[in-house]
Length: 432
Image 1 (tube, rainbow, N blue to C red):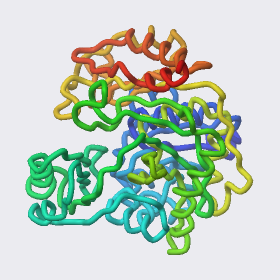
Image 2: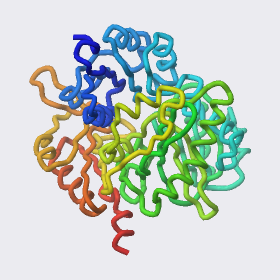
Image 3: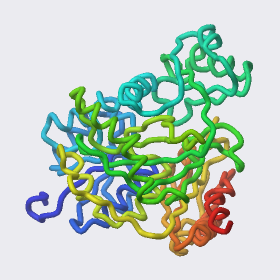
């Protein structure tokens, strides 16, 4: 049945992870009761949307499917199809796309481009330079620790904080000689000290409307030890970031970028994610992403009271968010990431997952990130580094945190990795 016949909008969500599962779930709460599709999706999303077996980098296939299915809106989750121009192709075909054009997506696709834009827009960011060989990289370093960033996409793993020359040399050789993430240059920037904050904003090409703040945990082990990952957990809101502070931050880090991109003829539509370091000298931007963060989305969207379908649709239209004020639940959300054995270096896959139903019965939201259904018996098995997300809501950080861990501990698979300190700092601050 066509969308016109049943008066329900049809929405395609592109992606296969926990972020996309959270987006599908938020759209499912809309008063518009959209018919939901997801490409390629995962076993968890399959319970809430019709899956299409199309890879996220198949730009033509995704656009064809959106056209053939009569989609009213396509929500693009991952960065890869955005950088590859999926939003451009959909727009060319007259299909509303929530996500920036390839030109605007360079804010995430190139660290060097993002730094240049920040500088031009007057957004505070660390001092930086760009190098394309190891010798130049070592010569550019004046003090340690130093931050080394691969210029292109690296799935959240292209940043190294080198404590000394040996670590810097190894990272530069990994990026520039071994080409771990492919061909590309390296941004060398001063290491900022402070507390990190993730602040996402919905953008309509003209204005930025900030969402609830969140904090995430990049390192694999408790105490922020070990290598960087795509994120091991998050929570929202953030102590000390009230509505006034959030508006102040967004005016500093989001709106100048939206203004500059519009002036350059590449208006930004979608989500602009600012990774911010709150230093003693004030807020500084570490990086921009051009899509919903993962796992921040899993903590932010469950708190959203505003209609997700109406918001994302409005953001596709120039100025469509005029007068919009977002409404979030007053409570807390804590999201835990359950990762597979060997993650992040060499994730083990194919391990049977147990306890999913038990965790959901506790009232937690379980979103699938890296799972698959085994053909032989239909069992849900691990299929990626970050396997599942468990999110719990509560009136306080402590209640939400306890509920999230209680549910997460009901889920098991071989070699499961779970940090034990997610949101602990928020709980400690509340009790101080």
